Image (tube, rainbow, N blue to C red; front, side, top):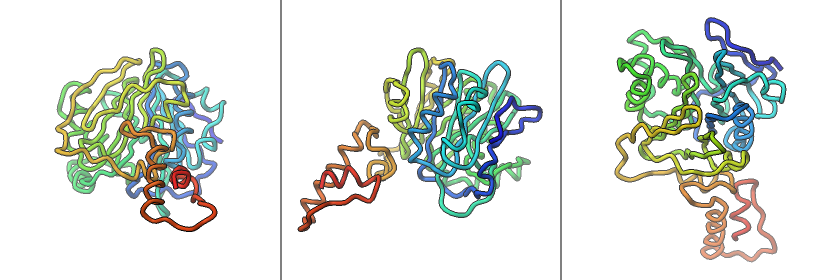
Length: 322
């Protein structure tokens, strides 16, 4: 497995090529996992553990970006988290800031460029983007950006946000990120690093989950609470629908809340299928919810049977409830 290194000029990613023959699909990803770490020593190790806890959300590919005083570092590749990273590669992903992603998609696809975090360099710094969701206005935005001269390196809808940030006319990076997010439609939970600053954002309907945790002086944002538990981090709160937060070296600042939808619309399949049983989604225990589903199913559709067998793993709790 190729080891990560400090990125040379121009900003060229280092990939794990062990599984390079696997095609990476660029179609909408309903079940990916994202994590951001700020203010923790060896942030890459924390990101690795969190991604390991989120492995159920994506088994096709994984990636981690870090940043320190020497600049950005990146390693990503096709396969499970344990296939892409080992203790030696993690030690070379230096810094107290990290962004990680595990990817799920259906069959088909194209190339390794679509593995996240998607990385780029623009005039204000190095960008690393991890995204869970589906941007419904992606094609319109992409066409407009291409017509204006943008050159896309991937076929992923996620890259659109990077171009929107780079083309924003606002002076501050905070304002550029905020401005870019206002153009997005659809479902997104996003963790974005610009050098050592992490931004986390959730779409106004809160379709995909995103939580904030704390460990000592550091902070973590992740798709599920199980990614905090594995680190021994405390759950602070859910990132609110439409909220944008900024984390610098462990300090959290709420930038703003985008206009909220009239009615939040979290995806019901998080509780039914996507999330890990030991996580909490919108304050609800996934395990307890699935057991309740099983009890309701047994009440409404009783059967004469000696045993109830789950189709692992999502149905285990429901089967116990039945």
